[in-house]
Length: 186
Image 1 (cartoon, one colour):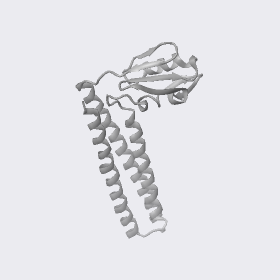
Image 2: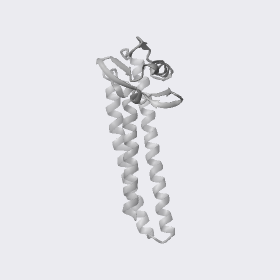
Image 3: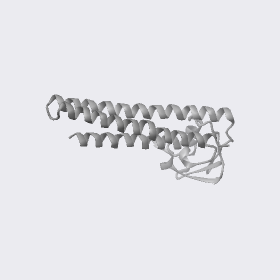
Image 4: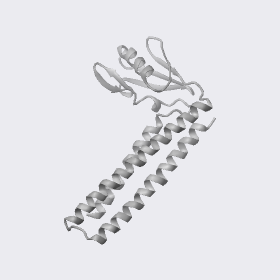
């Protein structure tokens, strides 16, 4: 019962870290990457749909993204969503495709992006700590129901704490340092 709870915590914490990694791929690093815009939500026939389901996204040049909608009538909706997003990009629409030119990042913008990364890292740490809290609550319930002993509870809490520290500090820090280095690279 304790092992299953610890395993569940580990799976959920890894999920939080995977979510963080996916989230950070959308933060610009100066190079064009489809991950920057593929999850952008577009209003398409009254439904929120991700851009990658509506168009093919390619990288013809290092600082250019090319969006080719499967349905040409969705071009205006895609353009509108890009303008409304916090990406700070201006779409160039030629009637068939949208080109996004990524301007080179200046020092001030790089520092702003690093702050965004740090905020996302903290959100992930909070999610991991919430998972720990939920599992500890479950373990305490097991102890109240006499399914596990007090000693088992303490041992499980220690193991859970070590897992939390490994995930919340080591894993998240490693991901954050890598992304920060990527952003600050000129």
